[in-house]
Amino acid sequence: MNDKSPYIRHMRKEDIQEVYEIERKSFPYPFGEALITNIYFAAPELCFIIEYKREMVGFLLGGYTGVEKQTHILSIAVIENYRSLGFGKRVLLHFLERSSLLGFNSTKLEVNVDNEGAIKLYEETGFEIVSRIRKYYQDNSDAFLMVRNV
Image 1: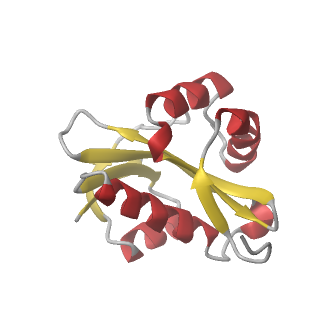
Image 2: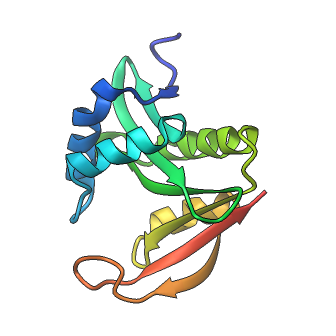
Image 3: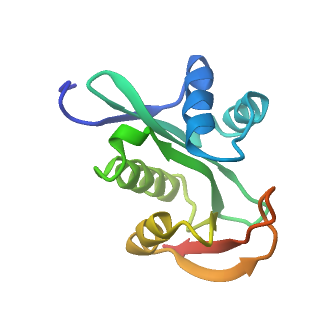
């Protein structure tokens, strides 16, 4: 591994606290540590860490849906100092590739309707807005449901 190149790996149990800290600093209503733990143990093969210079700079928490052959991106975040450098896109593309290799042909996610940067990233990687979910977040703001099919 080259210390100057981003490196993506599967999340490990010992990463939960650091993932929680990044989550907490990234979102107004973050997932709690217990929920992150539950997500990890439900689908460790769909949870990834992105490292840069041997430091965790972001993560993606994925899971399964009740729909056959569909995965769910539950949370994706990058440390503020490393945003807009392509780390989020790299971990997202890695997740999509791994999902496909595992036999999944669809991925869904929810994103705040005001999060223009994330919506643009998702559209660039093949996601489409399929519906608006009213009052999805704790502050009653709306989310878009986005889906990407292989």
